[in-house]
Length: 91
Image 1 (tube, rainbow, N blue to C red):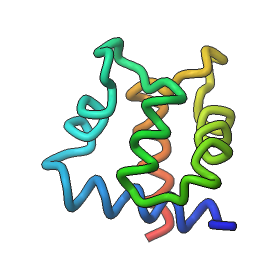
Image 2: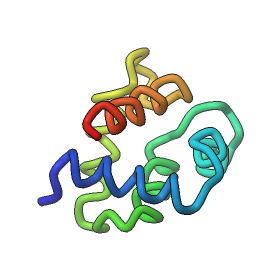
Image 3: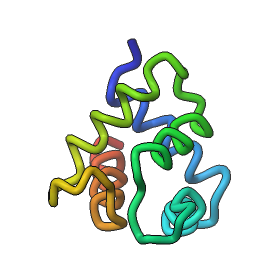
Image 4: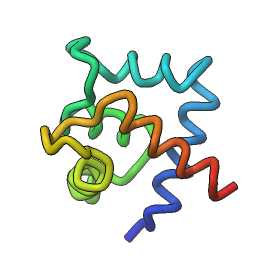
């Protein structure tokens, strides 16, 4: 199974290669424009980042559990940015 670091690195690669900024990536995957990423929107992000379909749902749940601090089962921009900051701290 892919490790958390491998998945976060795939996300970083996607964001830096496909988008001008992390904000642009967030807005692109926020399909309903409500300012948060739902589980299905996170799964679309993971698919685009080439995370295996077999584990995509598991990873989406883990990202929500790990970063959604308000318990609404969505990831806000601030929570998404916290995940990105974690990637930068590992570099």
